[in-house]
Length: 315
Image (cartoon, rainbow, N blue to C red; front, top):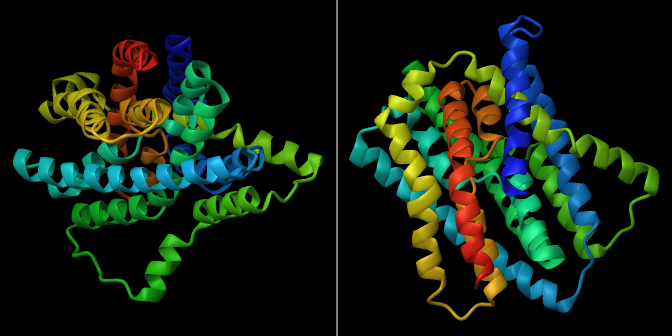
């Protein structure tokens, strides 16, 4: 089942790659498709998933803990990325590529599917909470990081934004979608069936379009350079083995329910988020490098995820 899900993702990547290579789509179309991913599909998915979850006191506790641990995990991953960049001397224009690859995982598709398959509705709910907090950071801090890379790429100093400009960057369409989703969840406001169907249909576009964008961007990459790059090898090892192993060891020291530990660890085991290349594309940063890391961490997760998930089920 897990391998089938990963293969499904690669089919979308292949479609995007072939469509661009044979000329059905111009390479420039990736920028326009990424707008649909970021501004339409992703917000609709957030609202839909949150509207379909029931509220209870036990779940409120779980929500707060998932939010807190996710924030801590994201900040720790960002610190790991910063240290990695300094130790390995990553070019300044690519700093954000590696930081975001360490921070943000593909929990919006692979995480939801795998957690539901292995742990049922409770596992899916917990992963949804992790995904909600991840979305907020991805479309705020992730955009800021991408813009810093873009500034380094052009040789321009990063401008210090005013509070007004900073809020404009953070309060964007995906963030508004996440806020609306949380509001619907906590208030349990019913969404009319016809509107729910529309949101669900639009949200379902996120994974195929995001992965097609990855495939389109990979047409500009040299496969040999992707595999032979030392930074790429180190990133794959850290993203799929070292970082999740470190967090599992730390979290196991605390007295938390086994399913919490399993779902949180699963989140860190996932490959880099499929949306990262779209964010870097939109902000003029190195989207090709981001696409390479997304592609390769996803490919190698075929080997790491089945083994890890079997171990998690034994908790």
